[in-house]
Length: 92
Image (cartoon, rainbow, N blue to C red):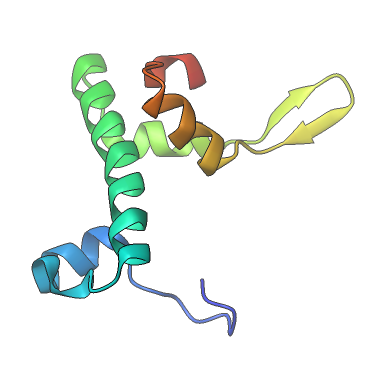
């Protein structure tokens, strides 16, 4: 969702529709690279487990509880940990 509440296309939709043309700045190129790392990790783990990628996305988006605190996972932390070489399965 954008700031105005309107749905924005996902990076996968942009890539499918425009190829690399939509990644015209360094910021967009970095954003795509980061998200692509997460997308590929999800697809690989889904294939390894024999499930649909959407199943893993739902599991990753599910709020977690520790003691009295409930929180959602940070997409940025997930990306950083994947770049460090941790497998996606450690987050599920």
